[in-house]
Amino acid sequence: MTTVTVLADPPVEGFVLQDLAGGIVDDAEAAELYEAMLLDVCRAVEISGAELLVNYRPSDQVPNGVDPETAVREPVTAALESPGNARFEVQVGSTFSGRVGNTVTHLLDREDVATVAAVEPTAALLNRQLIDSAAMKLRSSGVVLGPTAGGRVYYAGFGEPIDFEDSYAIPAVETIGERAADAGLDVDFLPSAPVLETQSDLETMVPLLRARNRAGRVVPQRTATFLDDLGIRVVDDDGDPTVVRETDRS
Image (tube, rainbow, N blue to C red; front, side, top):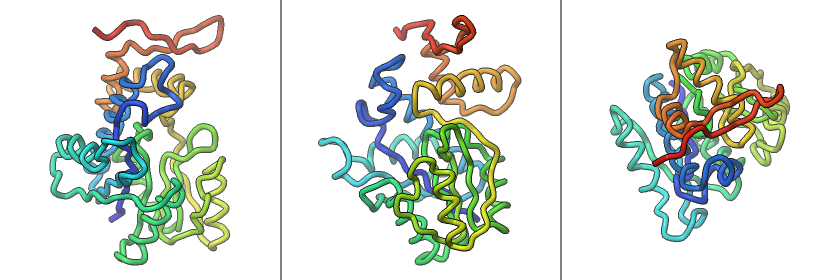
């Protein structure tokens, strides 16, 4: 069984989705959107049957007055069907690469976990099929990556540790792949899928969510509903896709 660790920031205003907030959504809405994605991703892991490990930021890396464990644990626990099966642990490390590396290496080397995956809440379209597919690939490959736009990754699975220092340096999919090759590990890939971190990501994510919903396919329900309630749409502006907001929240 793969342990999927979700590296979660506390969903508080002004701290999350900073490359998205301040534009078509404000800081408060960005925090709500981040929480919606966090809950959707955690539920996807739970449904898949993988072991869910939620890693929250240490208190010295979040705004004053925020309890990162409570801010993450309370909404996630309420969203899960079997919250007692989820683990919550503090992240260790000063950089994202370091925090992923410390978690993955500890689980593989100290807890004898067979395979470990690292994801973020912004991987809103992560679902049971992708998680199960990655678990199958990890049986024969030391590293499995889920690529997304801009050379980023929405999923990184490991059966063996690599050199994690600066491993998420842009472009992460190439950097991690090179580190895996240096370690003598085979690399396999999941289908490309969008993440939601920036304004430009909305151009891909929003139409895809709406199309999948219209087709009766699985969507991250909280994320899709929240964006729909905001009235976020992508429209044709003289041949260019443009993100607009058709309604205001009351």
